[in-house]
View 1 (cartoon, rainbow, N blue to C red):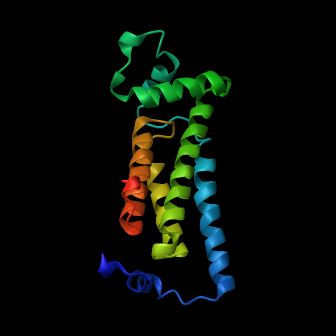
View 2 (cartoon, one colour; view 1 turned 180 degrees about the vertical axis):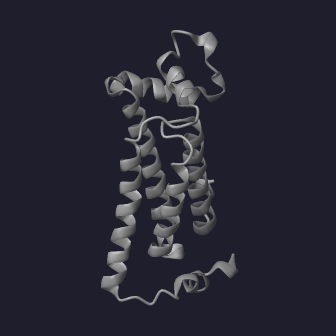
View 3 (cartoon, rainbow, N blue to C red; view 1 turned 60 degrees about the vertical axis):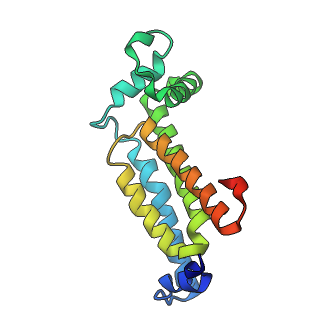
Amino acid sequence: MSELSENTVSRSYAFLKLKPKTRLWIERLLILAIIAYPLTTMFLGLDLGDTGYHVYAYVNVFNTPDKINYTSIFSTLIGHVWYRLFGGFGLLSFNILEVILELSMAYLAFQTLKNVIGRITTLTGLLVAMLAMKTYLKVFNYHQLNVWFLLIMMILQYHAIFTNKSIYS
């Protein structure tokens, strides 16, 4: 891992020679865009994915178990608990859960990468990722939950490698 020293990695974003005030404004605009985009698109209604299937599974996990696919049981149970807590908001409640999941992924990735590749570079990448995530499903689903768990595993592996503590791996 000697080729990934801090000096080598820090040069990857050294081309951004900005004043601290300009850098701060760019960071604020990127953070605002990362937060605002999913919050505004969650009100756009249905998408063209499997929204109906997912919402039906969350609502009827115990009523009609013969019509539910149990390969994604953990996300179905999370969706069912969310439905029990916030089901009165209808489809919007599952959109809110999806936004919470996406913003938590962005926060975790930012906290992990900001000192490695730089804050502006990390925020730019997160904005692109956020734009790509909203092209599929707008409701909570097992795809994004799997990505969340993969992100947690990669963060733990990163800490295990760079701190030489195998307890994280």
